[in-house]
Image 1 (tube, chains in turn yellow, green):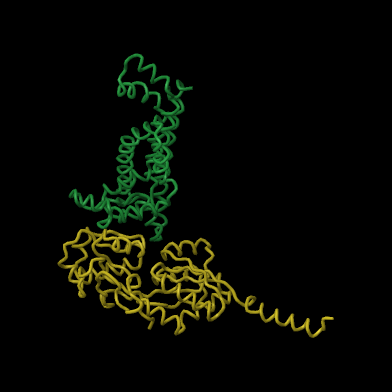
Image 2 (cartoon, helix red, strand yellow):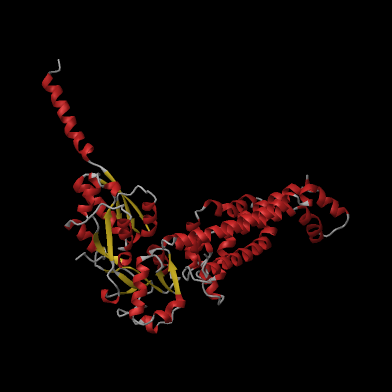
Length: 256
Length: 228
C-alpha cells in the first residue's frame, strides 16, 4: 500500500520541479539591428541567470517604432537612437521613468581591403574612391552620425555625390563587405574581433566620439510589458555587470 | 503634396520600368518561342530557371546579385574586364537586375500564347511559302497579341512595384537608383507618414488607371475575339 507520506513526497517533488516553470516568463523585445550580436549573448545569459526567456526581434529602429505605434506586441524596445524612445514617451506608450541609455554606439570607417583606410581617416581627404557607403541619414542613427563626422572633417559636400546609402547598418555593411563600395561608415560591432578587441579584417579607423554628437542607444520598458516579470527583469539585467561586460566586448561604449 | 524629390523618384521608376519591359520583350520573345516549340530535354531546366525569381525572396535575390556583380563576383570581374566597371549602384545595374527579376512575368504569358496558337497556322503559312521570320511577324505576332499585352503589362507593373532587389543593389542614390518604392519606404522609416501617403496614393492611382485602361482595351481587342 502506498503511504500518505509517499504521496505527499511525490506531490512536493512535482511542485519543486514545476515552480520555476510557473515563475519563468517570456518577453518579446525589439532590438536595433546593430545590437544583434551582443543582445543574442545577453539574452542567453539572462535566461541562465533569471530563468526567464527574452524573444528577440531584430531590425531597424524606425520599423520597430512604427510597429509599436500601431499596437505591436513588443514589451521592451532597444532603439539605436534617442529619438524613437522619446517619441514613444510623448505618445504615452512607455512606462514612466523607464527610459535609459544601454550602450554608446561606436562608428568606424572601414574597408574590406587591408591597408585602404588609415588610422586617422585621411583617406576621406585624399582617397580616389567611387562609392562611400553609409546608412541613410534621413532615418538611420548611424547615418546621422556618419554625416556629422564628414561635416566635422569638412568633406561632406565633396563626398555627397559618392554616397550609397543602406536602409540600415546591416545593409550598409553588405555594401562595404562585398567590395561594391570601397569604404563606408559602419558599426564597430560589425567588424570587431571579440577576442582581440580590434577590427577582425580589412582596414578601418575608429572614429573619435568628439567628431559627432553623443550616440546614446536608448531603451524603454513599454506599457505592454509593465506587468511582465520577464520584461522587468530584462531591463534590470541590461544594467548588470554581466550585460555591461558583453556590451563592451562587442565594441560599444558603456553608458555614463 | 509631392516634393520635387518624390517626383524625381516617380519619373525614374517609369524610366526603369519602360526600359526593362522593352528589354524583356526583346529577350523574352525568342526564349518563350523556343520554350513553346522545343522538344529539347533542356526545356524543363530552362523553364525552371526562368521561374526561379518567383520563388526567391527579392532581398535574397538582390543580395546574391550584389555579391555576383560586385568586384569579387564573377559578373563583376567580367564587367570590370570589359571596362564598364561594376553594376551595383548604377542605373544600368538596376535595369539588369529588374530584367532578371521580372522575366517570368513576360516569358510565361508569351509562352502560353505561343503554345495556344498550335501548329496549324504555321503549317498554313509554310504552304504559302512564307519564310520563318515572315511567319513569325505576320502570323504569330498578331495571333499572340493578347499574350504580348499581358506580358508587357505584368512586366512593367512588376518592375514598378519592385522593392527588395532595388534596395539591395541600388544604394538609394537620388536620380539614379532611388525609385518610388524605396522613397515610400524611406518616408515611412523617417516617420514622414504624410509624404508616404501622398506618394503611395499617386502611385496607386496611376497604376490602377494604367491597368484599367489596358485591361479594358484588352477585353475588346479585336484579335482577342478572333482567337475565340
